Structure formats: structure tokens, C-alpha cells
Length: 291
Image (cartoon, rainbow, N blue to C red):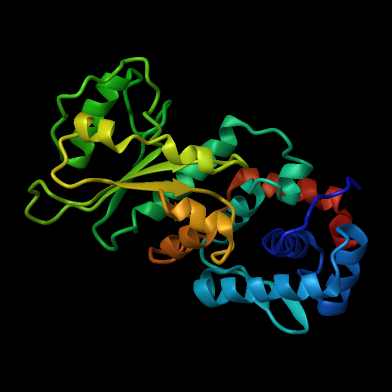
């Protein structure tokens, strides 16, 4: 078994979730969790207690969308709407058990998975009637490869006119992975637009400058300034310095907010092959809960 680096409360909560997910029983009693945590990641019962409190807060926010039942005496896996999306985000998180073991290298597929989940979630950003579109290339939506043509295409998809700013043809996406908007019934200009950067990198603060709103306001003729979003698969403690640092410059959409947004739409119980394969590989690494 590879030594795992798991120290923060959020990371220990993720470790518990992963261990329960890949266990043969689908549940762990509190004593079992304490024993495994001490043996595998060197976490004390106090740290485990704090992590379980964190999981309880996740459950309180997400309700039926959270794929775990958290009790004082045990943590149980359960069926839930969008469970596959939650598991995928958990595995995509930098520093996760999956990323430290069976998915040690970042791949284009991993980035695409985050964008697909983000597209589905951000379509609910403004409630019913909202839309979202992945802007990366290659595109399942038919986006042209050249950036200048892609912006014209995007403007048409959103219902805007292209702006007059120079659009370098060799740019990839201008820092934007997903665009979300909410048209009004009158189809007139002056509706909300959000530009999202999605990242699976561990270092997130440097990604906050990838989207230049000044440039985008010249590329798309928007009457109102767009929102800038940073989408990540992990979680950040809201009282911690990382959250405060990020939210001073960008709106953060982490795993909990992504799941909150997904939960506002229709349930989707379909599997995601990548996460199913990852879970299978993790069962071998973690010996199906017999740690």
C-alpha cells in the first residue's frame, strides 16, 4: 500500500468517503474508521471526529444529493441523485486517494470530465431557463477550432453579437472552459453571463487570472459585465485563508456548490466509466476495505 499524504480536515473527510465507497460492505462503524485512519494516514480520533463533522455539514447542504449517510456511530454509502458526478469529483480532487495512486498523472480526459460536470451544473446557475456550454476544443457542440471563429460561434449560441476587439486566431479558449447564461423571454440584450475556468490543478490561485474580463467584454458585445467563476473538483474550508483569498477575486464553485447546482435539476443516475474504472482500481489498492 502506497503511503498516503492526508492531513487536512477536508482531505480526511474525502479519505473516509473514498474508503466507504470502495469497501465491500458499503459502511464503516466509527471504531473501524478510527482504527483505519490511525493505521493508514496517521490521523487521530479527534481529527477523524472533525472530518466526520465536515461530512455532516456536506450532508446538511446537499441533502439527498450527498451519496453518504453520516451518523455518530457509522458512515454508510447510499444511492443518490448524481452520485456518479460526486464520485468523479471526489476522484478528480488534487491530493485525493485516487490522484495519489491509480490516477497519478493529469490527463485530458480528467479535465474534460470536470468540464462536462460543470456544464451540467452551471446550466442551473440561474435556475429554470438557464443554459451552459463547454467552450473547449475539440468540442462535442461543433465549436470551430480557430479562436476568432469560435468566439463568433459562441456569440451565436448565447444570443449576442460578436464584439469588435481583436481575437487572436491561435488562442485556445481565452481561459474560458464553460459559459453559462440566462436569456429572458424577450430575447433582448442585457442578460447575465458567467465565464468559468475549470481546473484540476492543485494550485488554484494562479488560475484566477486566466479569464480577462476586459478582453472578453471586447470579444462579446455584452451590455452587462460577466461573472468570472473558478470551478474546482475539491472542497475548501469556508473559514480558511484559501477560501477568503480566492473569493476576493473570483466566485468559487467547488464540489459542494457543483453538487448543489446539479441537485436543482433532474436526477441523473447514469454511470461515468472513468470513475467506475477508478473505483475498481482503488479496490485493489485499498484491498476492498481490508486496510
